Image 1 (tube, one colour):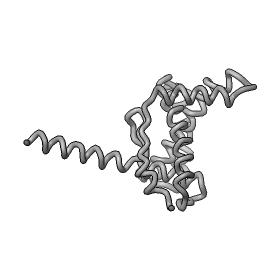
Image 2: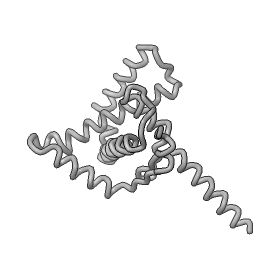
Image 3: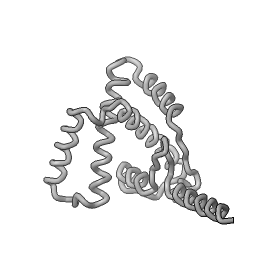
Image 4: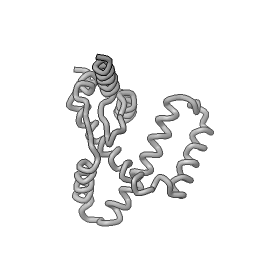
Length: 165
């Protein structure tokens, strides 16, 4: 009986944890807060959006995260040029004194910069250096390989909650 209670509690905990995330890529969650922060940032602060628009943006965001994951797997996050670039950006951001280093916004801005730099670096290696003529095809094939390689779970219910229908 005790095991049954433990299993039920564990299942509820996992369900609640998953419910607060819009997706999980390779075991790493994308929280509602992170996703909506990026969405609003890239859409002029507009949070009043349809489910279809959020779903489309989530798939673009997943593609971005997959590229970052691939860059990390290639060790690009340990590259000295990348680390120097991130350090310079962090110094510049701190010099602006607009956002406290301890704030969640600061952490999201730094994370966005780090991931964008990685995505740029891996895209340069995987796409831009390979072909000047057919970049869209190469990128589509790369995304397809990444989607097969890394498990993705999208929480449709949570995405629907975020949409202002």
